Image (cartoon, rainbow, N blue to C red; front, side, top):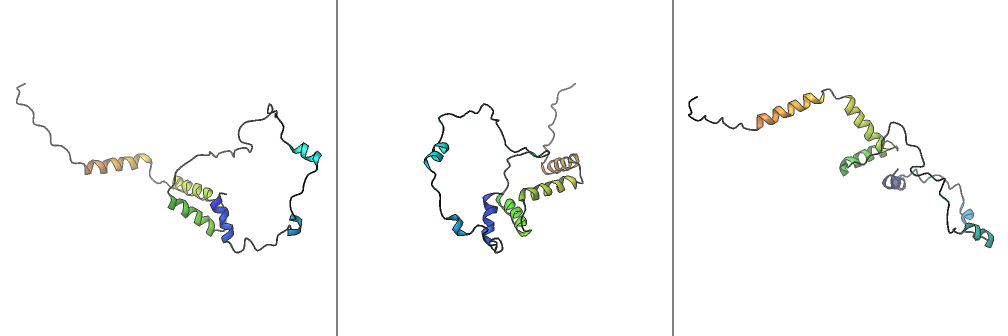
Length: 138
């Protein structure tokens, strides 16, 4: 969920209708740690990262690839509105479903579409008249 989706909770009249499970008196304020606790919490001069691993902590879902694409603002807003109207969810899932539907419902092979486009371009472009041959005898 991104920030824009999270902000939507403030516009939802039902999102804030549940009572707070942690009453305010439990949030009285920060506690001060004693001297020993402070010494344990202080930063060390060096840390051992020899057993650390680089990369993502959470495993990547199989069959999914993270990409960066540019989508027009109005298209992205439309998908987000659809998710909001449905009561929540993920707009990325909705985009994925739409792309999958286009892929599966493609009635014409790409070759047919390309041939039609090339023919249309050839019809629009006027042909140059053939050059007259020179009067040389063969």
